[in-house]
Length: 116
Image (cartoon, rainbow, N blue to C red; front, side, top):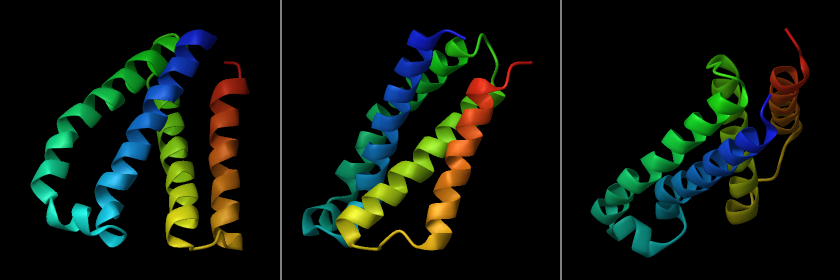
């Protein structure tokens, strides 16, 4: 595993998921987001690069393997969403959500720590 590439991939995936969280859910919090759908959609082009780079560097970090990258991206997305909904919309982390987050952590741990 190439740790530097892996961490760079996590950075880009995290940035992408945060951007998408605001792009999709901002309409429920701020009037500007509700009234500017076209502008928000245009940001999708930029956000796409975050996911492309996240995939590129995470695959490189896993020495060319694609499956671990998918699980890492998924887990980062679920975690980012849970934190964002909890913080911005005051939807607390229920026991069901907590278990789901722990499963995300388990997914990442399996992909990072389990040696073939």
